[in-house]
Amino acid sequence: MELSVAAAQELTPPGRRLAPGGIGGPRPAAVIGRDPRASGEFLEAAVVAGLASSGVDVLRLGVLPTPGVAYLTRALAADFGVVISASHNPAEDNGIKFFGPGGVKLPDAVEDAIEARLRAGQPFAPRDSGFGRVSEATAEHERYLDHLLATLGGASGRPLAGLKLVVDCAHGAAYSIAPRVLRRAGADVITIGVEPDGLNINRGCGSTALGALSKAVIEHGADAGIAYDGDADRCLAVDGDGELLDGDQILTILATELKDEGKLAGDGVVVTVMSNQGFHLAMREAGVTVIETPVGDKHVSAAMRDSGYQLGGEQSGHIIMLEHATTGDGVLTSLHLLAAVNRRGLTMAEAARMMRKYPQLLVHVPGDGSRLGQNRLAAAVSRAESQLGGDGRVLVRPSGTEPKIRLMVQARDAVLAEQIIGQLADEVRLALAEN
Picture 1: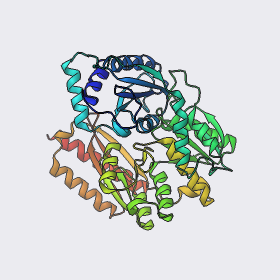
Picture 2: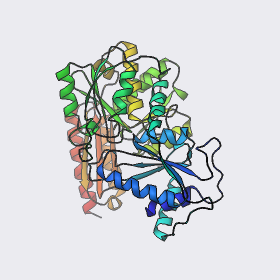
Picture 3: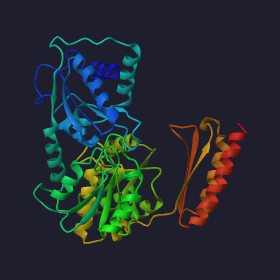
Picture 4: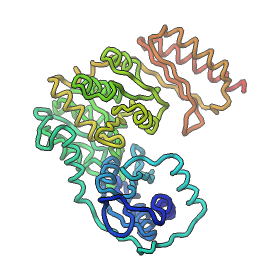
């Protein structure tokens, strides 16, 4: 409750003018949505209580994907939006995320200011206009669904006609809306992971555990499978043989389709330093410029806005299509991926071959990244790159969340990749031991 009070104080300071055409009334307004975790029910109650006690009107959206909350924050001209979700994490975890006006993620400085207010323990006080009121707004789900379909060129079209799909909703926030929107787009949809009980979100299903989806696709003779994570801000796919398409392959298909249609803004795309070398080669052949950022969707989004590009994303399947959304949207991504494949008359496996995926190995070495000897490390990376001969990628970076150094090697040959990453891991361990 204290966090939502601090957020209300920072995001709607006294005297702030409300957005024209907004929800209406004399008070600021916020929308709030969540995924199906059991803890989300009482966290939502606490957040709503804090907001309303601070004089903010609250529209409860119920269970809805994170990008749906972002979209409705903008569509309803709310002052801010709140999502209660821990995304792809297990059910025992949970978190609270805020969107600013227009449904965009908050700048770091604003998040820091909210945290400072929280630590200061400033008491809540209703506005001159009184306490906020709470209302249900689950009917607004249809507005989000209509928006998704409209991005394909009209809600009445059936661009997925003829496709037989298995869709894994991870017992998460997309369990209802994703199958409905895919069916309305014309697909024959078989569902798994659509029975949330508050405790089974992401458990052996969804984009972090694709085994169940691959098995179901093969058993049902489906053309493809789509998997979302718990809050549906990302998606991955499998082809008719149950083989994975990761975010780089999905981006390749989307970027190529948009480029061929003359709709790829700036003829460019933004990815992170973890992107596959095969993606870069595919984009070079397609005449698409690639910008790289540090790992994290906020870096991708910032670079997209700075460059004027409309498409970007990560290997994890967190794809951002700024023309249609302010954040990653798994359901939106899956619609455009499937529509592109269907328009080209390809199978998903054929579409995946638009990018040759280089073998990629990841190793995590325990240790404090600040203790790495940079000269020795730079020499080790240089030697690794020389062994690759310009046909691969090497990355060494401290983890942003754990005391580990993350190593990545991509090479045309899997044996070479294994050899190089073993040598690199040894060099990192020695560098840590010397400092």
